[in-house]
Length: 495
Image (cartoon, rainbow, N blue to C red):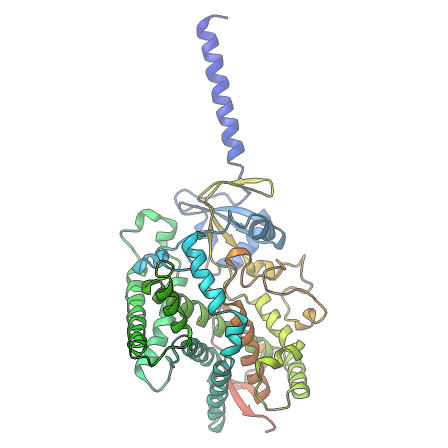
């Protein structure tokens, strides 16, 4: 063998080895064949959670899509979700940041979007220990009770004239005031005040913009152009909310300076105390951005869940009958419910679980982004890949749930499955390090609001619509809304 032939053999062997290594490294999960430039974007449709659930039936519970220039892996089963969010939680813990969150650099300060590192840990500790801790929630129970009473009073006033109640909007106002009283000790959603209405509309607008498909997220090179102006509008909305929070913080600082408001009465006092004691751990900017997180994440999700729960209860008269019977027996007909009553109401709790199973507030959780190469289920997924966990598909998986598309609260009466992140068949709040910190508050407020509305009134649908004819279509966004708002007419109990 001459020297030239030997060199050619060596080069050939080297090229073959490189090709084999590339194939091994690139053994991504299966998925549909992408188109040039667009990739699989056209596969998403108007209801991506549903479209990807159908694709998973063909390509499997872990599949790869090319969304524009972004490689995305979609997880659609409890088993794969457990592998990612429990066994390899740290690798899957960072977020894929949508371009809209670059408005006011929110992603740099938000506990939702920060990477898992020291700053994120200190902010998360502040949330868990001082805002959503059991003792703190117990101390604020009277506030939530008062807001639920105001909701019932509003509905009772509608009864007098036979007026229709928009359940989602009423629940949104209640959720917003509940949070604003917990944080600032004020109502921010008084329907009789223009400024309060403006703030309510701002939060709605933020959720709308955040939920829109944004070309920049699929084609990052378009970031400077912002072709749909989503980041520009989000900058305006964020700016107005942060301006309001800044004014509220200024007022509280002035009261504290005058020694009129010290005593850890509400969340803003707690956060200001932390800031004064450990300025390196939390400063004023972090306080204002945390408030923004709390309002955006804690209002739309709660109101949407309550609206879906009421929708399913009215859509299924037998479920409504059973709930009313339990409430009448345990609480007494026509009475509002307190948080301490929830433990004695297993059927009401089952309704909430079933609602979260079939209508998870955030159908894909918050998108993740791998910061390291990962091997999962025999596949090699490279650093930088976006991860979507389709909890909507997991909650409707027929291999896990009998009659998976039917609303059947009874399935939870003799079941230990819960939504606190340990049972991956039901993870509407996520799991692992990134589980929603507001879960302890949500599981207190939603059952009380729902039970009080069911127990205090009888209901009929607007226009005399029969329960079986209700519109049950979904509207996809960052939260999963009803496509057609639930409009119902309350009737005083016993009439």
